[in-house]
Image 1 (cartoon, helix red, strand yellow):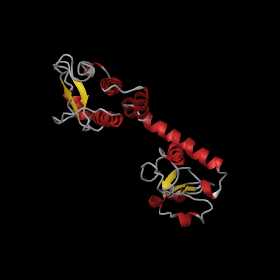
Image 2 (cartoon, rainbow, N blue to C red):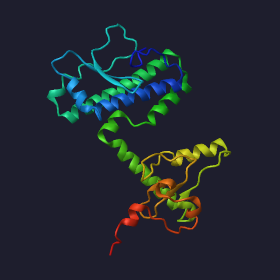
Image 3 (spheres, one colour):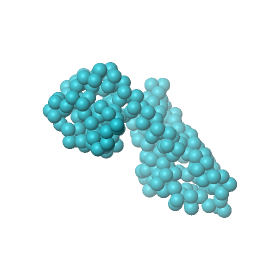
Image 4 (cartoon, rainbow, N blue to C red):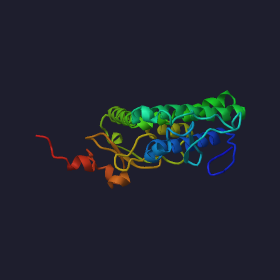
Length: 248
C-alpha cells in the first residue's frame, strides 16, 4: 500500500486508519487551498483522466488512475481535469472537495472491512472521523464559521451558568490525579475552544481566562495573566477590548 514517497504499509487498527485518514485529508486540503495554483496548473484538460490523490504523509498528487484491476485501494473520482475550464473555479474546486471527502471515507472503511473491524471499532472510527471538518467545510469556510459559533455558545453558557462569579472568568489547570470521567467531561466542554490570541486549542493542563467584554477565551500565558492575579480581577478585559475606546 503506497503511503506516499514509495512507503508501503497497511494500517490495521482504528488509530492507524484514522492517522492514515488525517494524513490523506491534510494533503488534499493543501491541494485545494495553499497549493491551489499548482494544483490548477496540473489539472490540464488536454490530458487524460486525472485523479487527485492524498497520501498519509500529508502530500498530494495529480495523476492517472492505477493500472491494477482491482486497485489496491478505492480510486478517487476520475476526470477532475475535464471540467476545469467549463466551470467557475470555486465551483470546480468545491466539487473536487466533495468527491475527495467521499474518497477518504471509502479508503478508511476499505481498511475497516479488510481488517475485519467489528461494530464497535467501525463506530469509533466513524466518530473520530466525524469530529473533523470535511474538506468541503474547510474549503468553503464553513468549518471556521461553525467553530466560531460553537465557541460563542460555549463562552456564553459557561459565563451564564456561573453567574459572573470568579469561577466563571477563568479555568484553572486540571489536577493530574482527577478521575478519567471528569477529565473527559472537561475536554468535551472546553477542548475545542480556541484562544483569542494564538488560535490554539485549550488543554486541561493550561490556565484559561475569559474576557467579560467580548466573551472570548485566552491562554493565561498569551495575555500575561497568572492564576494568582486572576483571583483579584473582578472584571477582565482582554488586550483588544482594553484598547477600544469606550462608547459614549
